[in-house]
Image (cartoon, rainbow, N blue to C red):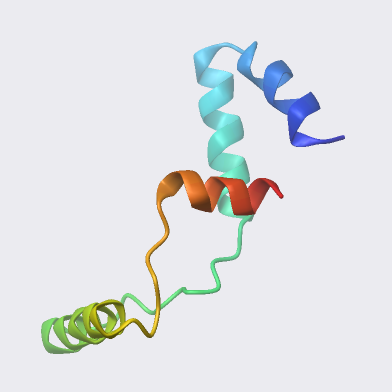
Length: 74
């Protein structure tokens, strides 16, 4: 089944069942950018500054939500 087949069916579910489905799907996704939540404040700030520098220098480019969704659905 494709997302185009599943989505309309899922949207017909009652709100509580859609929420349960959404939570189940979210939990099934492995995030390649997962970081530990054991960072102290200094480490978290350093990480944020590093990521900001990557954006500012052009090393990485930001994605809009729409572009992200297009890539995920491709």
